[in-house]
Length: 212
Image (cartoon, rainbow, N blue to C red; front, side, top):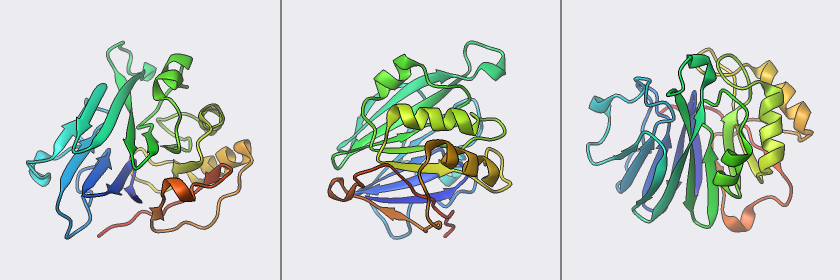
């Protein structure tokens, strides 16, 4: 499995002959060039105009909310979490979990509030966790660290840095890493991971946004 970060909260997962793109932003690169196969796109905020229908393969499967999905041999589920700052009970953030290659990958979306025990139970065991490191418009770094400790993934991929909407400050990233007590190395362009090479202890992996 190959994981790339395209910037903001957008991640591309390459698994077998399928690609999953979590939370694409307008103008995001899309799947790796030259690839042909199934394409699944998820959006944690269906109320935001993040997906440009003119820039997406019409054959793509687009998931915009909670539910359980089986697509091209991939198992996905979306779990709703509230966004209390919106001032309405109907505003939600959908946390998506992808099950493939014997691994469980969780994309927390634009998480605003701490996860409830019911949400954590619905997620199940998580191997790879993608979540905001803390900052404007999302959970704080201490809350992010608390979620990490509760879910206890093997790999944490933080969303951090930059000036784009929804991006998180590097100061928040440092605070989150300090809270969980796990060192992070220099950013890398992509992560290749299999069930057999999961680290024995929790590891924070920093990715560099890649544009093609």
